[in-house]
Image (cartoon, rainbow, N blue to C red):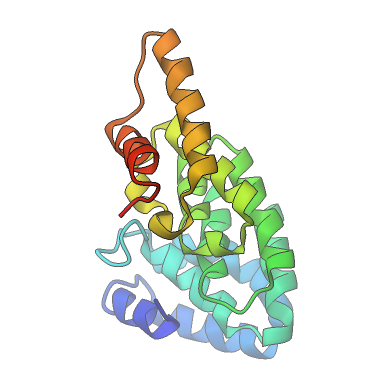
Length: 204
């Protein structure tokens, strides 16, 4: 996924293309302007869902493009501030951007961890998408466990096949035992993941 892909995805779907073009040019020359433009994106650009990337909306894509228009040395600090002070939709867009922009793990990881501590399913799901590459193994496993606990589909977890390991299997087995004791079961995809990890030691 690239910024060019995002531009193509929103082509013909923007409520106000001229506003976005002007906003992109503005933040490129005046990075601080993103603070007032970022919250206005949903109202000015629209909130239609996109076919691709799956789960994204027009406002998600437009906000990521705004972040991408920032001078590189401003991107990390602005992304952090926009996440900290933004609403759920703005936070989600910042999390999406962490997967596309050259933002350090030192900036990205705390934002992802914050998202994983919430009970907002969309924030948790986005934090476990491609941006999760910034998470260390322990934090990533905890994120996957939370996704299972919340009933989120594991198909949305990036790099699951490469990162799932024996320690994750142990954690899933513990959750499965807790569920059995409560007369409940793991979701089918989590049960399948646990089965694959315990029988073959790998997901695929």
